[in-house]
Length: 81
Ligand SMILES: [Zn+2]
Image 1 (cartoon, helix red, strand yellow):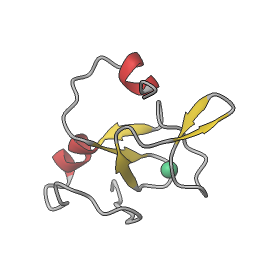
Image 2 (spheres, rainbow, N blue to C red; image 1 turned 180 degrees about the vertical axis):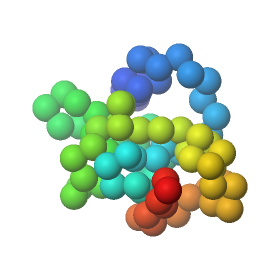
Image 3 (tube, helix red, strand yellow; image 1 turned 45 degrees about the vertical axis):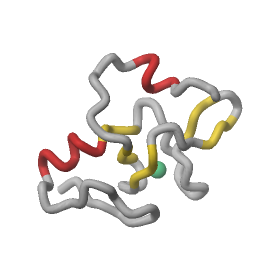
Image 4 (tube, helix red, strand yellow; image 1 turned 120 degrees about the horizontal axis):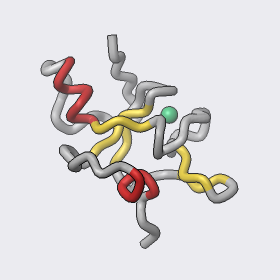
């Protein structure tokens, strides 16, 4: 399996198995992405965010929103603010 570019670039400790996309405010499992011209992109087809710099650890979002579930729902939008 191809390594996650994000996990290679960021040394921040992995805190959850999910990432949250800055662009579409949806979540996906770590290790799930779409490859576009060699870039690892957010797996949602209608999103132009990438899975490296536009992705935040879901645990960091939950620090701000403890009411959000530990396992986020695929396709659900979780607002940061
Ligand atoms: Zn996205």
